Length: 115
Image 1 (cartoon, rainbow, N blue to C red):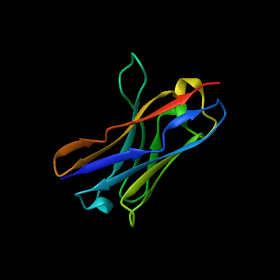
Image 2: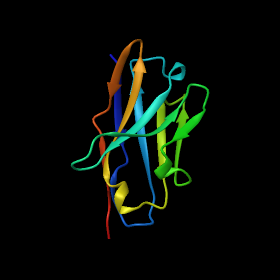
Image 3: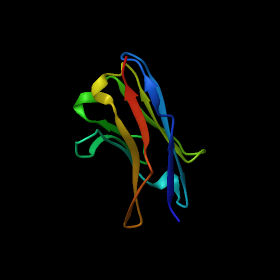
């Protein structure tokens, strides 16, 4: 059974940093692209970043230069390093993977950027 578990969220001041993790199980992790999404209160869930199985990365314009997605295939984990955080980055962050025709989401981790 495919499962994703996010961690690393919390409360941080504007300008601060956080690193999110998403641990995968039940899949051949190294074969699949993985995504980070986020959902702010009252808004639709939005795509944030993707890392392919080959390590190619892509980002939504609003986080380019501030966020970095990476993966460690030995640990079946992806990361989202978030720097220069802004109040508008406040959201629940989710990892997502498409595995063998199915789409799987983690439970999410809350990130709150506030002074």
